[in-house]
Amino acid sequence: MTGSLNLLFLPPFSIVARFFATACLFGVFGILLSVYMFLTGKLSLPAIIHTYTLGFAGMTMVGALFQMIPVVAGALIERPLLKATLVHLLLLFGTLLMVFGFAGVGTLLFGGVVTFAGFGLFLTFTLPPLLKLKSYTPTSRGMKFVLLNLGIGILMGILLLFGLGERLGLSQAYLLELHLSFMLIGWVTLLVISVAFQVVEMFFVTPPYPSLISRHLPPALTTLLFAKLLFPKALAPDIFIALLTSVFSLVTVRNLMNRRRKIRDPLVYLWYLAMVLLLVSSLLFPVRRQSWDLFILFLFFFGSFAQTVIMAMMYRIIPFLVWLHLTNKGISKAPTMHEVIGQRVIWLHYSLHIIAIASFLTSLAFGEIVLGTCLLLYLLSFLLLTANILRGIFIYVKLSRT
Image 1 (cartoon, rainbow, N blue to C red):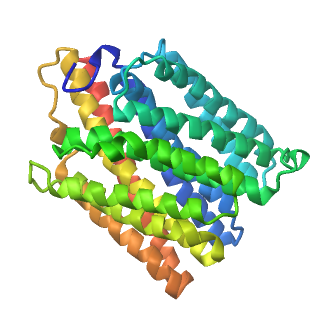
Image 2: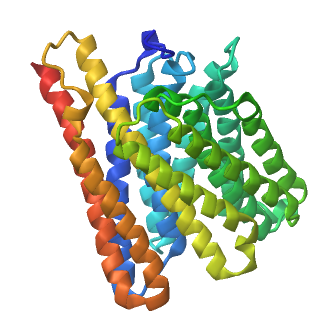
């Protein structure tokens, strides 16, 4: 054990590396796809959304969970490399086929089958070990609810994609609302919340989250999502969801401001930014169905929140794992975390990321004149993230062979 990490179950470095590298490449691909659609006028919002939700965010979160479930929660996943490789390949090809299918190529249904198979196997590999645990930390308890919500979100997606909802008397609008809510709130947001209970305190030396939040927030959010199953048009569940996620963002900011190490760390500022974006998206969540413009704003702020957290986590996890795995191999010249990915380049990316967010908001007022610049800034942002993560991976590969 190192701190509260169970290193006996530490999976191979290549698991996280392949998922994170693929996620970065999906980020670049998503911008190039957006540029193509911008130039040709053939916009497909579902194709762009699923490029980021499945390709960028999904790959990152699945890869992180293959690492965190055994190391943080202490739940052993047997033969992790084989299982992770199978899930990675299914999600990779399934996501590409779905994206091209949404863009009109004709591979949507097959891509959906492959993607759902990948997530189904992932749940099969990860949920049973979690359920067998005799004691739970706030993070491991939250992960149970995260995986449950992922399963329901996938089920809603299946019913939508294959048109099965009508046979069950369920409208597409009902299924789409539940698919969006369970995937964005129950999967993405709740995973960030559950991981934050562990990593924010551990990496930034902050006060712990109040037990009222760390113990009860995951089941409370899940209960509210289930309420939407019964009352899909009710506004109350959305308001309470927004309230709970807003409270989490404010408490996280408070904890970071009260951290014991008051060094100027770009990752702390990425978390600050992420929590501000989460707060704004939370305020937009109950009103997103009032108009198309509000829905687009919600998606943008939520997507920016997820991207910012992923950047912060990648910039911490990859250097930490490079140092940890090389040290465990007995390599005396193992680089420090700051030598794997330097602080200066993270500060540069932080500044570029803020400018890109501001450019998109500006484009809403000035239209296509600014949108081209916005896409260029986001392309540079994802290219920089990809270069930094690949550099960390190459450092590990080079030193591990020596």
